[in-house]
Image (tube, rainbow, N blue to C red; front, side, top):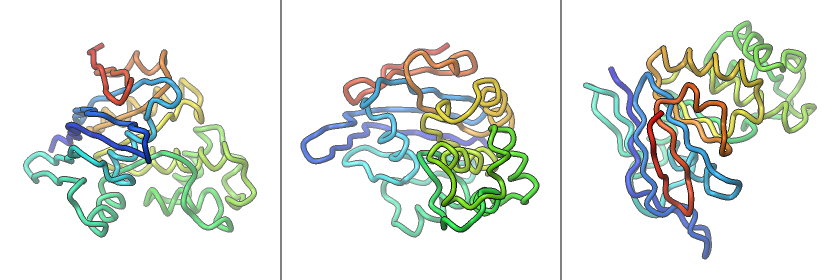
Length: 218
């Protein structure tokens, strides 16, 4: 099974601001696809369109599972999107949506579907091991983001979309972990600021500018 994420002609507008204008992306299993961009270029909007958080105003997002067919995420109803996000998509685009009384390790384990031991190890890997037994409500913003990132990295899903993970993880740790994800066959899409160190391991790099992505291979 080869996982693929295909987005064609994506457009997204907020009020009078056109954030995406015909953006296209193709990510395949076993590879890291990197989208760089300046602040305000629409990186987070792109990531959220790819994972069903936002429904684009135009264009399509298709998740392909090889011989098992594909799903048009943009045409799917809310229940289907929720099912896909719970079972096939691992996404990081902000703090976790979990009760503030839940400990960091419990939040990771619940979101990723992993053991408590694996959750603690994942947090430790991201430099947040001391947060493991603290309730989310006591963590600062960066700590909560690391919880969400650990959950996405541990989820073992065929599709992985991470919005600016470099802001919340040591560079060498992130690079090694992303390599492991691609070696497992996941289709990984990462957004980043221009000049990202992740270009060294990316199969394709694009720059998001004025709503479109200009691609070049590495």
